[in-house]
Length: 451
Image 1: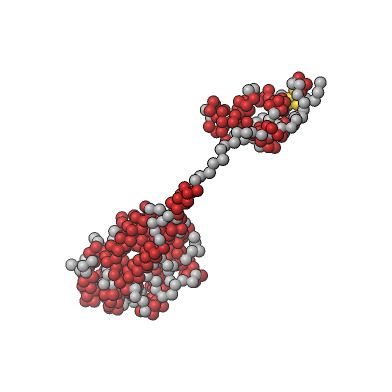
Image 2: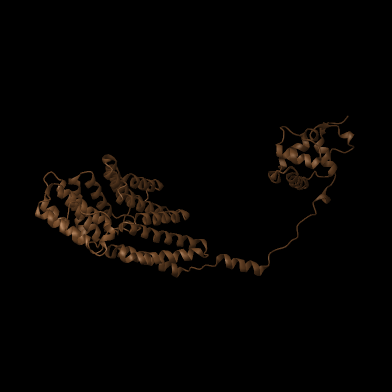
């Protein structure tokens, strides 16, 4: 009796499959057959490694094969695995333990050697790289966005919303077409910015539903191309919308979500100062608001922020002056009148040299309110400053100026309604409200107790 060997080895030698490539071809075919007969599509991907095959040939199996491998082997050899790997006497098969030359056993069933038609390849390449958008169109769209940002505080949403809508529509039309990846990425970014501009305008015009829709579009387009800065900007605009609806918890939540995307990103400055600090202060969370203020100022110091007073609607990071203007508002909401007045003095030279009429109006109204809140109120100076602030914000009225102006009057009228200067300020508010475009931004918010 000879040395006992796995039946598998003898059957492989008998079939002259001892070359792994030949066995692998047979096993793959059996896997496809088994997948169809067993109605188990997963069997089509079952394979056996060269190392496993060599071990089966020399010593059989150490551990039982997987169920999938067992099924394929059963279809390949027509017997259960237990029988296949049983140790048997090779003499009963009349076969040598070693096989002879097998060069002639290399499979001859090769697919036909065919390639695509060269002209067809060139035509397909042309289709894949074709574009309905060239560099000039991208430059034009980027220039249009910059133009809207630069003119926004002078003309306001009423005069620029049509231009922004046309730009967004053009970019959407282009995106329906075909462009190479780099061009398409830039189109997504520009379309996201156009939507962002419209969202910001809708907030200033008291159109919360439109603001939410546009801001969501900007956020999703930015997410598709991984533009973290634009995502944060869109969340900051969403926060702004909630803030002017008086939904301060949601405003803080949106801003916090933006900060979480990249806490050290320069866009986080806006999210902390304009978003979190102001919303937390309004919600009565003093310590958290102060912490957000500190984070915003420290982050601003760590970055090379733009000089001067950046436009409120700009996609650039907040400048130091813009951050400080928002910090003033947060301090006012938590009753830190000394901080309001000190920081406003620091801001004064920056505001005087800027074209941001709304910022001058808003900071002026904040200072006027602080003058009423301080230990020794100065009603006359507060009302005078309030009138001047409203006057500078009348050219292109926006909702934030109106709301802050009404808040100043409400606070003044509570104690000093009979004072002539308070009555004079009420008249200025009425004049502001009478502006042809002010009705839309004022909405249903009227002048409390004023006839």
